[in-house]
Image (cartoon, rainbow, N blue to C red):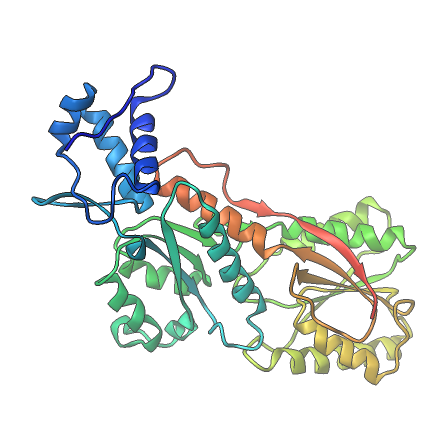
Length: 372
C-alpha cells in the first residue's frame, strides 16, 4: 500500500505528515479498520526521518484518528470508537441545583464537536461527592461505571470539576492520563478557576456608580471555593472608592442538595432582624450564589422589601442559566461556555505535550442587569 505525500520545507515534517493522513481519513481515502504501512515502510516511501513519522502517528493516535496495536500494526479508527474524555462531577447531574455542572457538560460536548483536528467525545461521571464518606473506591456506586469504562474504552484525558478531597482521592484510578481541573484559585492543582477577585471588585464598583455606598455581602462557601479572593476584591474596591467597608455575612448552614434555598431564606430573615434592631440597613446587597439568591429573594418578598431601591441586589450567576427571582436583580455572570473552552484548550495542550499558559486561567465575569 502506498500513501502519497508531498513534503515541503516550510513547516515541521511531522506536522505535514499528520495533516495529510488526517485529511485522507476525513475524505475516505483511508477507511475505518484499514491497516497502515509499517513505520519503516512509511519512512522509505516518504524519505523522511523515523522520528517525524513516529511523532505524526502518536499525534493522530492521541486525537483519535488511528489506533496503534503492539505487534499488530496501526489501524484507522472507526468514528464510533472515538477517544473518550471523562468529565467528573461532585454532584449528580440530576440534582436540582446542578445548573452550572449541566451547563459545563453541554458546553464541553459542544467544544469537542467543534474541534476540527480531533476525533474526541466525552462521557460524564457524576455523584462523586459520595467519595467523601466512602473510602473503598471499587465499591463506590459513583466510581463503578468509571472503573468499568476505564477497562473497556480508550480514554485520553479527564476533566475534573470536583472538590479538593474528592479530586485527590479519584486521581489514583485515572491511569496517569492527562487531567485538567476546575477548582479553587489557590489550590496548586487548579488549572481553571473563576476570577473571584474580579467579581468582588466589579460588583462593588457597579453599586458605587449607582450611588450605593453601604453594602453587605451574603457569602456562600461551596466545594469549589473562592479561597477568600471574593472578599479581598470587595474590600479592596471599597477602600479605593472611599466607601465604608462591606459587611460580610457567611451563610450559617452548609450547602447540600435541596437545602441551600431554605438555608439562605432563614439566614436572610435573621440578618434583616439584626438590621432592624440596629436600624442600619445596607443600601446594596451582593449574593455569591444564584441558587442562594432564590432564598434571599423569598426573604425580601416576605418582608415586603421594595427593590431595587432598598436594597439594590446583585448576584453571582451563570451565563445562560436564567433563574427567576421575582424582583429586579443585577447579574454578575460567569460563562460555563468560557469554562469549557479553557478546560478543553488546556487539556489538549497536555495531551499533545505543548507549552501551557500561566495557570490557573481565570474566567472573567460580566455584569448584566435584568428586570423582575
